[in-house]
View 1 (tube, one colour):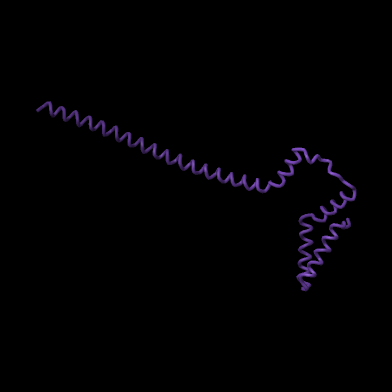
View 2: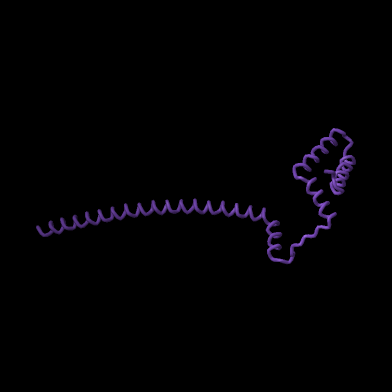
Length: 143
């Protein structure tokens, strides 16, 4: 497939810019090869040639640009990265809250077990005090 006019113009402008920027032929060669690598990586040639074909064939997008579904689709395409980052942030925060909740639950459990221990000690002390009072009353009644 031959290069379309847009791809040819892009290559021409880039080559001219490199030639005007530096006279070092090695650097020019490296920059051109890097440029070609990026063209290949991002399928720029295919995309620009497809655009040329669509334009030359008078292709018209028949989608209704005022429809809410189309507007939503365009809007979603613009915010997809921010939305993804926000979801990731929320998931991180949710995980932190879950961890904090677990920590608090563990602390509450420890406090509850301490309360039970203290209740048992209080009951023991109450029993002991009753026993001491009973002994004191018995001793008092003997005098």
